[in-house]
Amino acid sequence: MNILELSQTRFSARKYTDEPVSDDDLNYIMECVRMAPSAVNRQPWKFVIVRNQKARESLWRAYDREWFRTAPLYIVCMKNNDECWTRRY
Image 1 (cartoon, rainbow, N blue to C red):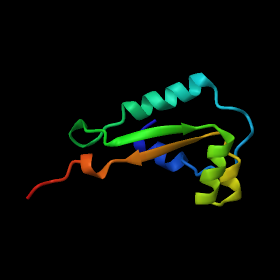
Image 2 (image 1 turned 90 degrees about the vertical axis):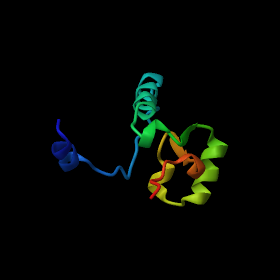
Image 3 (image 1 turned 135 degrees about the vertical axis):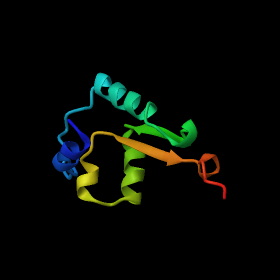
Image 4 (image 1 turned 60 degrees about the vertical axis):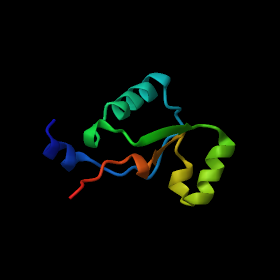
C-alpha cells in the first residue's frame, strides 16, 4: 500500500472491543514505534503502556470521553523538548 492509499483508508477509532491486546500485537506496535524516524535520529520520546485500571482512570480524568474509556490499554507518548533537534540559522 502506498502512502496515498493508506491516507485514503485511514480512520479514527471511536469505539473499542473489550478484547485484550495480545503481547505479540503490542510488541509489533512498539517495534514500529522504536523504528520510527526522527530528526537526526534523536528519538526525543518515551512511551508508557498503561494497562492498570487505576492508572487508566487517572487518564480518564485528563481526557473525559466515553469512547476513550473503552480502549483496553493506552500507549502514552511523551516528548522531551530539550532533546528535540531544531534548525539553527
